[in-house]
Image 1 (cartoon, rainbow, N blue to C red):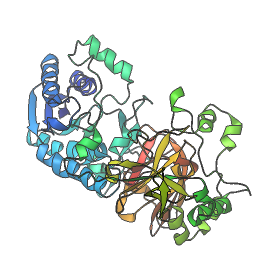
Image 2: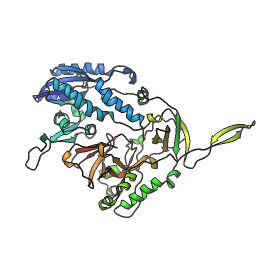
Image 3: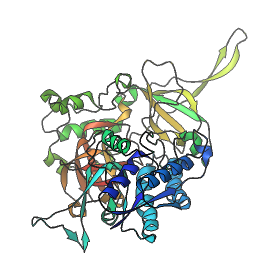
Image 4: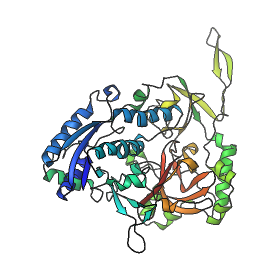
Length: 482
């Protein structure tokens, strides 16, 4: 079998190529250039040129043919343009997910097949296995063999999330040779084989673009426009209809009467900074009290909730009602007439920004707002009015949400045999961003979409990202843009 390895110049793809060669595959390497513009990178140089040089040295060391392909046009059209469109609409995209679906396992795969490849291999930390039926034979659907994608063995490096949009056809032509290894083991193999990439640092930033200053990158197409930063006070939620609806609805869904958790408690980022619930960590360590510190929803109650209620439960807070009136006053000995905003118990204008499209929910850095005891986070953006809404502290009410919705057209099942029908409710583990610990949740399928209700409220939910759900045995089952 002839296998093309996507050789990036990094240690992971290098070891993938080495292992396949040792296993007897007919292996060749191909390096893809997907980006030309060095002006957007922080380093200000063409990182891909160094990567290509290292990749070619690795191929020579292993003893496999090396090819080069320029996919920059496809990458700009399918990934970069998508990024700009999403940010301009106030959403936060994930270019790495699109890069895998549109480039590595589509455009790159087709280029590899033109060179005679039967399969393509990458250095992703994930595992692939055939889906077996009760008879022990591989299951086929419409003549297509079915495959499973499992998390990588290394919990610190699992990259299955980035493959969440692949189809069965794409998975069938993919190999992931290092998914059963840990990162230290991969480095050790590379070192023992004296590969030129053995000590090369992991790549960072946008897939194939490199480490960038995101606002600078986006300003290539999105024009800056000064606007106000509005801090939302806790008093806003006291009489807010959406907050009251969420509270009362979540309370009604609990198995036993009680107060629902509306906000997740987070550990300090300064102390090792896990952006997830302290109680969740303790629960993983067997703390029975911590296991109870979550919303225990009743399945029968979830089934009884109307589609309209599910839609409203999944909606973010609307801050457009926070407005500011001006008043004139006399200042100083000369009683100069000045204008100021009247006090508003719900919020206050605390600064300026250079474009709401450059900010994302949960963002803390780059706001330049002082005078607060705790950190300030973005809790919402209003692209049409060019406003950013912020809140103080990890436990600010606007930073947490319990329910998200995936529109019907955005639901993607890797395991198509498990696709949910309207009215079905299942328990899965879900992550809404890369490297987030898997979160227990209910998935509820209705005609208006797939609703995900988390046991614990989630911080920094930003539309445009991918929610990915897994089974209890580490299998990635499906995904969708929320």
